[in-house]
Length: 349
Image 1 (tube, one colour):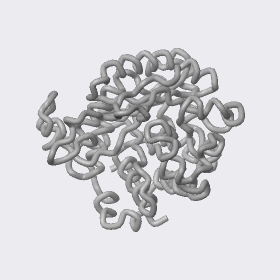
Image 2 (tube, helix red, strand yellow):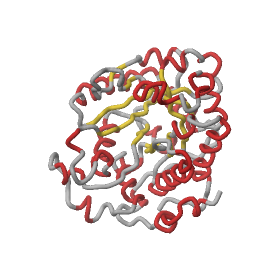
Image 3 (cartoon, helix red, strand yellow):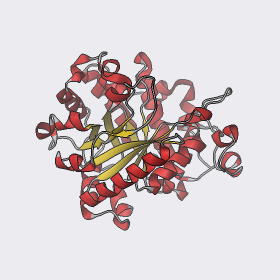
Image 4 (cartoon, one colour):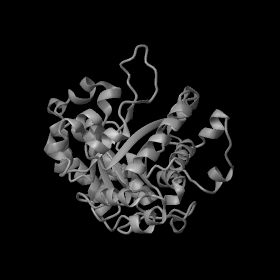
């Protein structure tokens, strides 16, 4: 795979960048000893450490400190028809697990029902992460709110190694969501499961006439910081597309150094600010693979992976790009992303 060719005009911008705004020496970076170096110093129980070890040591990236996760919770928010009609075989949960196995992923993250209906067939073959809350857009008119669909105990009962959840930080329901998921994560740790938090921003005020700041580095960075505060073991975040959200929407507090010294316009530095807010890398940042767009999916996924890795991130979580195409093509796309993390020539900037 010619990574430079896939990056096109951005090849030098991304592959040759030397990050000085927030140097890598100030970060905890992914690596084979990540659990030993970080989580054995924490309050996580031995069973949580064992299940984290199951995640980090499984699949093609096993033992590298990086992770590749297949997420399939879009059937609730985007509707099953919108999610699976491009490749209808994936209405069958077994085929989704087959894809995660074919793609050599570290884990599959999806709904309680999807994993529960096939758990005895697959739980020993691919680590399970149960997503316990969702945004159900079957309500009319649409309202955007994360609600619990499953319990941590149900996830533990079917053999999951971890639980995942989403919080819409900045939304009207964010206080309730923080309280619910904080309690759920505490229960997960008591039961020995690790925790993954989708840290999304959501507020109409974050979109101005000039730009959409839902994916601004400073706003998503603060969402990450709130996520690690409630003891997420992994943070999942959309890669930033701009910066200056606090200044544009004129709320909360920030510092001029964030924009003049600690970040730059380079996508690697913007993503690094997300890593910085994950306790300077002590909690791993995984970025989303983004919306499926057809022919450009390979280039887009590789670009996202290069930025994440060079920023100090810990991997990618990619769903629709993979499961909206035949299983061999989806697995090949995931393998291409994994190749970025296995390529020793692509270093942390």
